[in-house]
Amino acid sequence: MNIAEEHIVALEALGYTEEEARFLYVVATHSGYFVPRQFAEFNGAGPEKGSQAFTEKLKKRGHATWREYQNVGGVYHLWSRIIYRLTDRENLSNRYRHSTDFICMRLLLLDFILANQSHDYLETEQDKVRFFSDQLGISKQLLPAKLYVLPRGREPALHYFADKFPLYLDSSTGSSSPVLTFSYVDAGKAKPARLADHLNAYAPLFRHLRAFRFLYIAPSPARFGMAAERFSLLVQRPLEEVLREELERYFELRRAWDGKQYGKLSMDDLEWLDQANQRFTSRDIERLYAAWDNSETGREVWRRLFSEVYPPRAIEFRTCLLTPSASKESKEAQDGTYELRAPSEGTS
Image 1 (cartoon, rainbow, N blue to C red):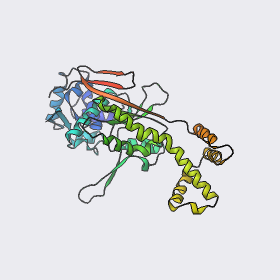
Image 2 (cartoon, rainbow, N blue to C red; image 1 turned 90 degrees about the horizontal axis):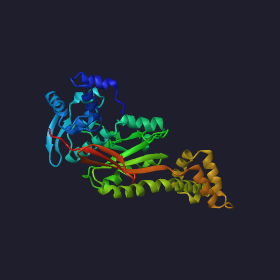
Image 3 (tube, rainbow, N blue to C red; image 1 turned 30 degrees about the vertical axis):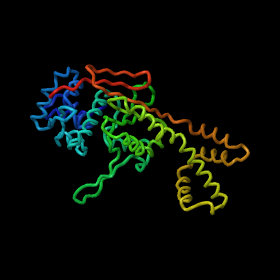
Image 4 (tube, one colour; image 1 turned 180 degrees about the vertical axis):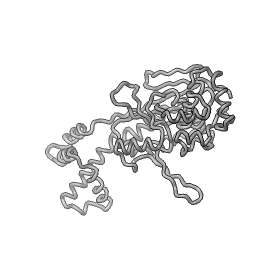
């Protein structure tokens, strides 16, 4: 995590220490909500030390409010516009009030961020769009987006990556290239079907990536099996099959067009073929088409050549367990599941 020095200096000018300023930046960027033990953990102090002076300072300056939530406990909400403006986060919705379920999810998300500060996070919507569209050359039309209806007759606003789940590059594996990692945070309050909606929203983007990891973050392992099955069904299997099926359709339509068998082509076929002609333009495609169209060599040659041109994608599903404990512990379990334990919540 790289925090611009200008943001720290701006927050320090409000009377906060450097450590407090860094914590405020993390909360403003990723959560909007926190509990005292999270600051104590960030500060390296015990749950009873270090947080009270900080939270009193926040309340006195009017930068945060405290509220008791059922089954959650006391939670601080960083809502002050000036904090978000000084960190270039003024357009984030984190400073607005939210439901209890949303707050639970954001607290869990913050636990993950605090336990994994070494990752290179794509923190804002602009960061994510810039990475995928400008750096990877992926069209914005393929990015997960949500249209928000605004009041007072204002034009609807289209936002990308509206879920704001952690999205980062992980260099901890020691590989020469960091692992692009998507995540889904399930605090146990949302319906399981929401994961399917999330994966479907990201499906167009996933199709254009050759390698990535998907991390399912939850406070209980109860849904880990379900999540793995959903990911396999909605992401891994389709990605393994969809390109081959698309190429076979493209070759069928192209052969009909080249053979002037126009009666076999519907208007939908012609429109799809036109788009496919713009998409499939490489020499490898021509080699594949020649192999597919060769009745003497058979389809086995075409399938073998396809595997050479398009080797299997490097797609990985992992789970991350975040549960309360007396002390923080981080380890990688033998089954490939990350287990991250956070201290119990303190009191205000």
